[in-house]
Image (cartoon, rainbow, N blue to C red; front, side, top):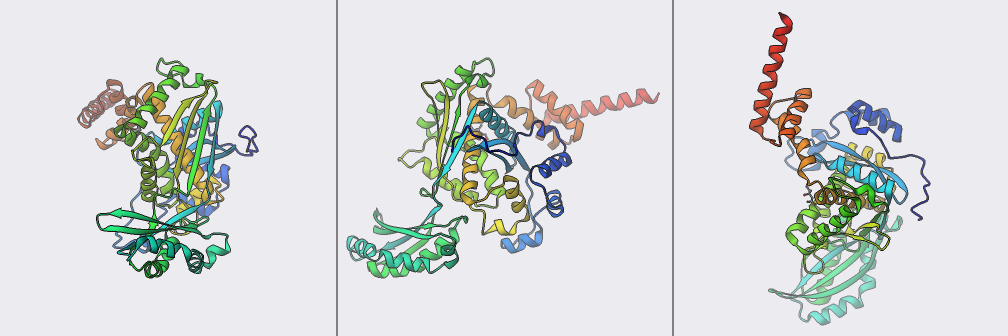
Length: 444
Ligand code: MEV
């Protein structure tokens, strides 16, 4: 699709969204996607009841809440999105919204996903002859795929199913093992359940063919056949000028910050954490398994034998800044919690998502945009200035301030550059004393 064409009928540019109160934000969301009365109600109250929690997990004792924010301004493949994020860390939603605005106004963002192919693994040990075992399994490949597909006729009806199978032999301290990979198109589901069922059906048969013993039969979270490529370009570097650095200087510093992350695993872990800041909140908001996504992204970042930056930054001959990333993204919009949790349905509606692959593209885009926001800040004004203002508010609330008072305490701590619980307590005391004295004066 040509990224410059805009077949757009609604815009995710929500200027001043952050200045609205909760009720006004709900009204804006209603304008964006017409909420039903039920949906408005669900949005206002705690969406997951203790009764529902009790059927979701064992030994449930209740539910635990986290904030839901909406990152605005996203335009991906010329389509506008708003991105719900369930996250406790202040500054992530604002940083993502700001960077998404910068990219749409000064360049573009595209994302492309592969087919939703999950890998299921079968481990065979103590085969009499692993090489012969491997050959025999491959001879029976078509039968095995057919058998796998008999496990889920619905998946076949909607165009998914097992597509291929291959076999590796690996060397381990327990001797050679035959590892079978079954590749399954899980369509709009994350698919762990269906591929686990298929693996458990094939496991004993494969063990018999290879004259060995089956141990593990389970999905691989290194979903490297289910990836998204995301790419943005900033054509006008002036927009990156910040903290006394020109746009061009800022861009060069961004590229150098990326080189650091790519060369040093200590930095790569933090850099990639910044990517996951943009992804995890959306994965949680859509009822998907964020541990699976985390595991896959970090394993993929180490796929050449060393843990590296998962994203890339470079300047081209036209002096345009490019950000790129390829990551596994095993997420779905049907099955599991997505069908049960009332909040998830609304959040998916906000996004206007039509398929699991579209959700994967938005998630990867949010990760890259968030990473760009963090690296741009690190490479220019440093992270603490912005972080501290928001962190100061949390510290002020923790120390007992609320409402207007919390904002005053936070502003003073940020101004002093001393964001500490004890200092917040002192400022609260001083401000309350001052208020009391003023009240007395007014009374007399
Ligand atoms: C903080 O949650 C994330 C960052 O540390 C990411 C980074 O260092 O790139 C700011």
